[in-house]
Length: 322
Figure: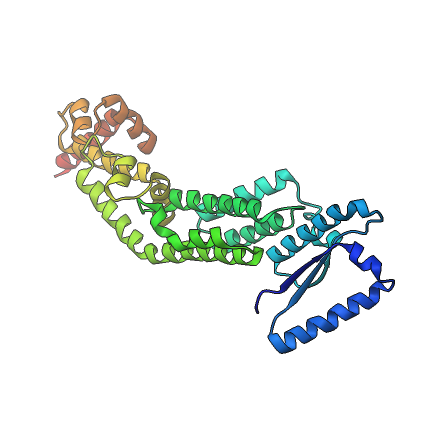
């Protein structure tokens, strides 16, 4: 549909005609014929009623504001000033919108995209029902939603350059959008782009997790081995690596590193009964023997010394039986 022809009429114009209903009926007929012969729609924006001629400038301003608002909402036909602005839902409060924005970001980080999309729709509904909003302010709020999306995806992503996920023409289209439906369309398109990009990357992240496991097994004795080091090496963000690894392996990645080191410590405790604990700690990547003892006790519910004593006696007993 083509843009409607615009007309901002202060209501004083109607006071020249006694029958206002006649004017509205005439407008409808004109609108029908313009559409019939030119495929153009017509919009008539009307201010409140004023009794004094001195109020004509106010009346004109209201009609102009009504027209601008209806252009944003892509409305046509006869629109009254008093009907052009709508209040937010009665249940919405400033606190509620902030909470909804936080929920949107949380769902994005959790990759719960259906709920994230539903929350985005609620937020947009709130934005576009705010009384007296301008297209400029609405754009600012839409960019706030973009910022929430990018922040959530940054915490979620293995891409080093998060802006590469957002085609530059999306940002340009948002800047050029003149109507609420167009802004909403572009914003939803951007969300869909991020969802699609994440789906494409999901297979590769599974491969990366397996490579990370192999790396931990091969480099458990490296004192520099840490979650941050793994994230940097495999081009992942720490929050994303931590949450994804736990989701796939049902164990935290730090716990995986600790478990791998302690397993090798247990082997050394039995195979090398005379090796000092400090030397064992160094061989499995701990620079401090107390750190090894603390983690060993946390995972095995006993100290390395007790473990060595029990398993050394067990092995000696087996040798005697032979």
